[in-house]
Length: 238
Image 1: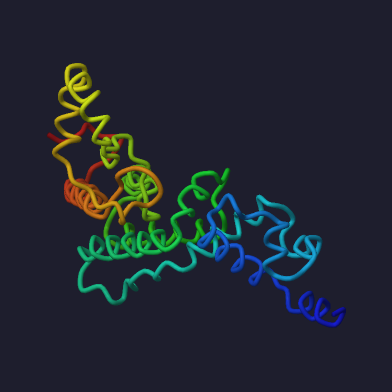
Image 2 (image 1 turned 135 degrees about the horizontal axis):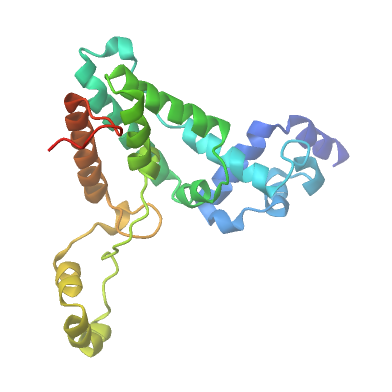
């Protein structure tokens, strides 16, 4: 028994700890991840984990790095046929990020909770900036583009308008008329919209169609500004 414990400790590494934490979050949810629970999953005493992650916050940072590290690498600039290929390259990378976040639905919540970007997130952002710069974007426009994309560049958005939650039949009968009287346009839109429940990243109605719809609007707008030579220091072109 002692030899088994020692073997487990000897085989323990930071990567193994982080991979186990990600797997635990995938199966049981992020709230289930604790140093004690993780040590049980790995078959070691809790103190053994602290040799590889200093605390829970460092563990969460490392989990973010594992997830972001799974995103497909960007298409090489050398493989582009023209500078205009920036749009398809960026779109491809962002949708790859979304596929990764769909595999780890807890990750968006953790990413939003980080006080500062982790090293792998910084590397990811750097590669995104490079694609815009290689596509002919000025540093000024790229700066504003990155702000506009926000969390969408990592494959998720935090929606303000959520019409994915359907009212129960009794709630419809009891409250729909009253709601329609107070918020007619909101109810009309919510009742008319259709969303795929299985495609949501976290909470909200951030489904695949809505995500790509907004992404394509942004990319088209970015390209128009690039062609216009837009600058934040100049009057907005008509």
